[in-house]
Image 1 (cartoon, one colour):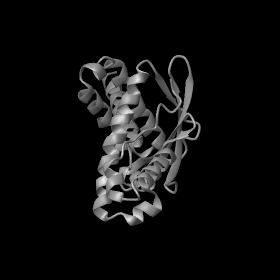
Image 2 (tube, rainbow, N blue to C red; image 1 turned 120 degrees about the vertical axis):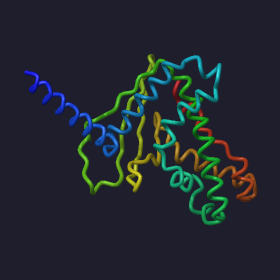
Image 3 (spheres, rainbow, N blue to C red; image 1 turned 30 degrees about the vertical axis):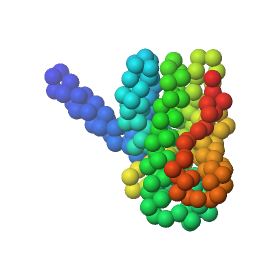
Image 4 (cartoon, one colour; image 1 turned 45 degrees about the vertical axis):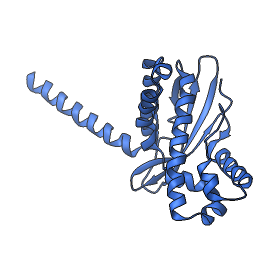
Amino acid sequence: MLCSHKNYLFLFLILFSSAYINSEDNPFIYIDSNAQKMVTILKENSDLFLSDRELYENKIKEIFEPMIDFRRVAASVMGKKYYLLSTSTQREDFVEIFKDSLLDTYAETLAQWGDSTISTDFSSLKINDQIKNIEVKQSLNTGSSNYPISYKLRKSQDGWKIVNIIINGVNLGLTFRNQFQALAISNNEDIESTINNWVSDAGDAGIS
């Protein structure tokens, strides 16, 4: 009997380890597991946003920052015209500025979703090594309404990374690109001024 228990324990550990490895390789599990971590943080730190905003934002950033391909997203936000007009230093600067502003905006938005739940659509779970781009769909339940969330992911050498997010029909990548173009025009297409005055703003994406 003891031997049998040991065998079951060994099998469990193998399965657990495999699940952990697959969670890094499988975009559906990857997105869902991090989303549930986010929900846990929101529920356990509901008052932290007001008492210690920096600590609250850091908790969100620790989960969300590694999930996004900020270099690719920032280039897309700049658009081909302004990306080519910018210097390599300006591009690097914008990646950092865009990352900080997006994470700040995201953390502030999440503060409004304290009692929410998120569910992931696993209906398209099957993937293979040939797939480099994929969409993972989720549903955000705020208690009064349900809102669809769509993550566009691309597989890189570092694993699956988010390259765009669509929340309740609002394409954040396109929204930010339009904002960058409008800001560039208002700054007479001065790339340096445009980058220095950048602030991510997607509103509340129609979520209340």
